Length: 198
Image 1 (cartoon, rainbow, N blue to C red):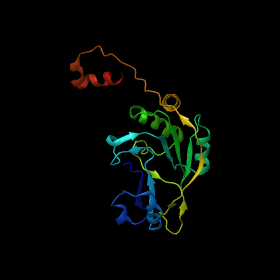
Image 2 (spheres, rainbow, N blue to C red):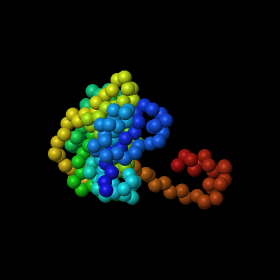
Image 3 (cartoon, rainbow, N blue to C red):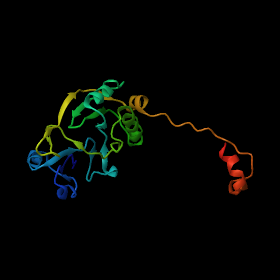
């Protein structure tokens, strides 16, 4: 059975400490009315939400909340590969790129590149990530609820190769320096200044 939906209390700290728990789709509205945030797993798992239980990667994702919404949207619009879906949250946007052929081996490389370009949440790069599900309220401030909503939705799908080409960060280049001295020089304090200058 695929677990897709989870509830986590938005403002009651004692309930929040219990963590997110799996809920059925038909119970989402009930839990949201009780103050629970409604989350989902963009990717599919058979059993617990763990990498070992992953059965399908559906999306590459980004969680953006740095800067104003106008600044965030400018960064999104500047991308060479536009998201397939954009969800508006209280502080920003969640972006989804629908995957045609994603693999776990390249997932984090693509995620790190997306995060870099969008100044997105650096913690949001694992395949097990939960994100807020649209059409339910953000209730961290119960007196000022915000309806999480989909503002853009397309059928656009992307191949892993084009995502890697567009988003993968370049590998760091290291200059190899050869030291002609003896390895004993590294424990000789009088040689340290000479070694460090290399």
